[in-house]
Image 1 (cartoon, one colour):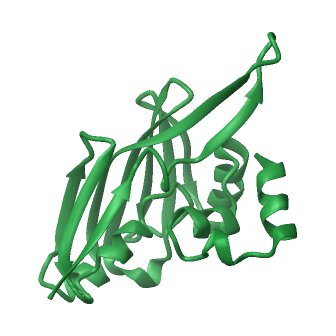
Image 2 (cartoon, rainbow, N blue to C red):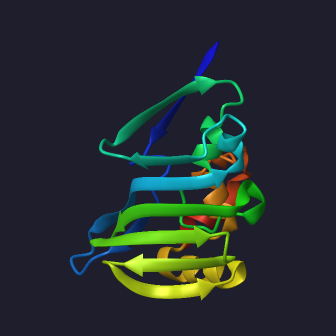
Length: 173
């Protein structure tokens, strides 16, 4: 039996922010994931996959696999919010590539060093951040905190939140 996980890169894993431009029109600014590289990601290692690189060349991606093969776990790694070291081997690595507001970003979680880094347009923006510092930088740069990261990666169902919680999330954007 195969499960199908469709990743809507321009819908569910995209952070949409609304801003008002000078003409008071709403402008949608999106974060578009362009690729990911995972090394030593335990959920995939259990399925004999030591390393995987995926280039997202289409707004829709189809991920097929058996129950328990790591499809949902892969989805959980598609946010700039720092990943957790317990999800990776000691020499694990996560590289996330995405475009945001006209710039190309790379977020690197290097678990062999226990450090996190962010590149913007091929220039090092922040390096050697511990997880707490990385969370603060991601919130500052992209507006993503733990709650929003969980919603974007389907760990928290937006539809099961109270109307007050949903309103608070929307008003932050």
